[in-house]
Length: 610
Image 1 (tube, one colour):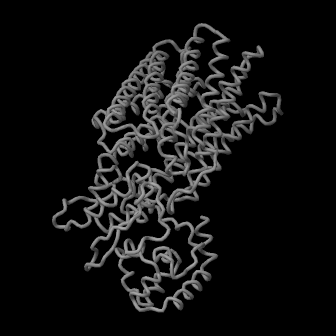
Image 2 (tube, helix red, strand yellow; image 1 turned 180 degrees about the vertical axis):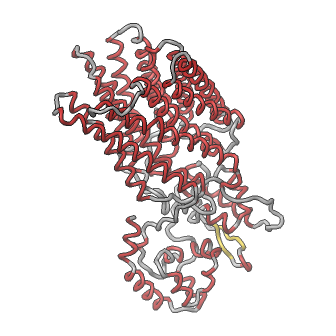
Image 3 (tube, one colour; image 1 turned 120 degrees about the vertical axis):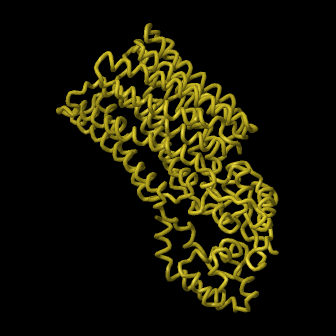
């Protein structure tokens, strides 16, 4: 057997060596790292057990995504050479002797139902008490009309803030964590019943607080207290399940575990502060948001960034000193949250200045160590890269939020002036809308298709969501312009931020719902327009040219009608080799394929751009 052209996997010295397997009618075919999980499962369903052992079974189901095995092996730290050998051994087992098992995500319906439940509730809170109510609040504050009717603005703010942070963000992170962490550890989820209970506690707690915000006392106060207690119970359950699941495997090279464990701890702190505020210490409410945003949400996002972005985006953050970075960041968060707690009773300005500088510096250090804005190499194979702009923009907004929040607060103390309220409000929304929401949308549109085995419904809709969301944050920035003495005429335009934000949430929810419903179509494979047919071209690459399959079949390559052959043999044989086996003149066929590529070149380029 000749080696596959262009294979140079970095995951092992022999990661891409060809492994011959007996295929249909005894034809020699080979499993290689060029094949996708979907193609391998379709051709050899018996390999599902191998993928499951390495936590790869949920990485592409029967319908998608169409991404190479190498990418997922790298993301899960599985040695590709070992994986290919195990897949070969499994594929050689006669189908009758292999255990019956359905490939793809359907092998774990309970796990799929679990994360979908969290995501559905998360989006429901965002589209009701979260973004929708937030848009009404913003319009009520910036336009000379009443948009709240008989609802008090403080009650609306309470419901909005809890729905966005503990409803949308926390439920989404919890659902993804319950699905992803077991796959990262190649281990089952610890205490799945407790994980299921945490959903009802978290969703019920947010709903109770939102209803209690509008209800009259004492019913409203009791509902808020009950909801806060449920949030604390949910946070404790979530932290225990994640900690036990993480403990079931060896630490990952990226050392992401301390980040997510700290994130769980900060969710407990935020929930405990919420309970204290509901019990009467309302002055602690500002500390709740600092603990939830910079502690819980940011810790989980940074931890997952260290874990998955190197494989998905081709970045290579240094592993040196990563433990010290984690410790420094959470020490800064502890100082920042601690000052927020202390100033509920005493205002100690020097402590606020020191904590603000530490928080801003630690956040900037994390962004620098992630290498988000550094040059990076392309991931292997034809992979979805549309999410990358979300990641870059999100971390840019995090820096803006740190500047307009902790850093500005510290500077105000130094120069002896009050912290501008509108600047602080914009800084908090730069973190919640620009960083937190943007990362959830970007990463979700990348990994939910992987979890579900479906193709993303509309990459173009995702593009539109990106620009609408960032426009919402930019328009919100008019608060800073007005605060710093800008034209008062800009004030009413701030209301547009709420409308744009709601539109972004609605677009994201629709895209995700249609994806999970299986309405997506397979995207065009990148690089098709760059294919220049030659005798050395791999047949699978030539098949990306529209019409090439029909041409090759008409010229004597009838076996290509078989999807099994296209999924296997076509990836391992060059056109020259195939022509020699079939007795076809390669030069004439190359010219026909080149003419076909030129004829469809413009259409192919357009499809790739989309």
